[in-house]
Length: 392
Image (cartoon, rainbow, N blue to C red; front, side, top):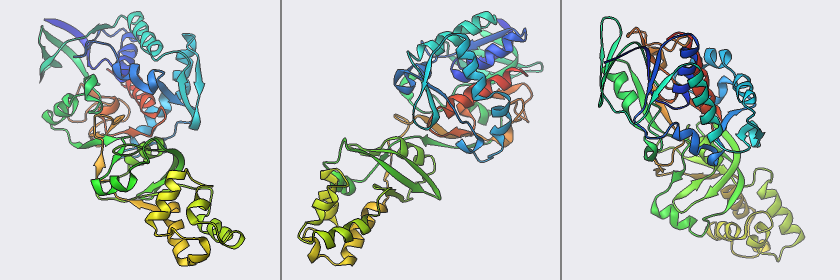
C-alpha cells in the first residue's frame, strides 16, 4: 500500500505541470501512467519540435460548450509564464506562421525540463502502470493498480483524449468521469483531415500532393491557411482548423484563390485574349492540374470567346466558393486532439475540482476545452495543470 497526498493519473503535459506545482507546495505527489515512455505526445508534436504555445493566446482560440470556462486558467498561467520557464532552462525557440512557437532543437528538451522540475519538487513518477480500479473513500480515494494499491487525498485525472491511439490514448478519463456521475460532452476527433466518398475522390484524382493557400469556411467560421490534397481527401492547417467546427453532413466552402476575383480575371482575359482557352488562363493562377480539371468539370473547355459570361461565372464560383461535403474524417488515428470531454459545468474553473466529487480533479485534454491548431492545446495543458496544482 502506497499513501500519498496527491495522485495524478497521466504523465503528459497537464499531469506533469500539475505535479510540479503540487510538489512545490510540499504535497507528497505520485504520478502514474500506463505508457512505457514519458510524455509521448510532447515528443512527437510539431514534427519533433513541439509547438509548445503561441505568441497570442486568447479565449477565442478555444472551443467549448462553455466559452468562459478557460478564461480564468489562461489568465492565471499565460503563454508568457511558460516562455519564461523554458527560457530559464536555456531552451531556444522560434516563431512560425500565426505566432506558433517551436523549439529550435527538439521536443525532448521540454520533456527533460518537466522531468527535472518534477524531480526538484520531489514528485514520484511511475510508468508502465495499469490502473485497474478507482474507489471513493471517506478520506479520499483508493486506486488499485496491477502492482499495488494507492491511497490518496486528492485524485487528478490527466489522461488526455482519444487522439493518436498508437501512442497510448485511451478513454480512461472519460469512463472515470461517467462512473462518478459526471456528464461527458460527446467526444470526436478534432484538428483532423477530411475524407471523401469514392465519387468525389475520383474527381480529385491527380491532385494528391498539391498545396496552396486557401480560405475554408463552415458553420460561420473561417480560416485562411495552407490546404493540401491527399489520397483520401484534403488536409493542411486550414482543413485541420475547420474540422473542429464541422459536423457530419455539413458542407465546407473553399476559396482556392482568396486574393483573386476569378470571374473578373476570366472576363478581362476574354477581352484581351479571346482565343485563349479558359484552362490556359486559369493555369496562370492555379497549379496546372487544378486549372485544367476545374475547367473540364465546369464544361469550359473551349476558347474564352466561345464561353458565355454565365459559364465563366460558374467556373469562377467553383474556384472562389467550391462547396464540398466530406464523408468523414481520418479519425482519431491522425487527429491532433479530441473535441468534447468532461462537461465544464461539472468542474470549478478555479480549482478544476468536480462539483459532485470533492477531491477529484480533471485537467488538460480530457476536459471539453479544445484549442485551435498552433500551440493552444499545449497552453491549455500548462494552464489547467498549473492552476489545479495550486489546490490539490
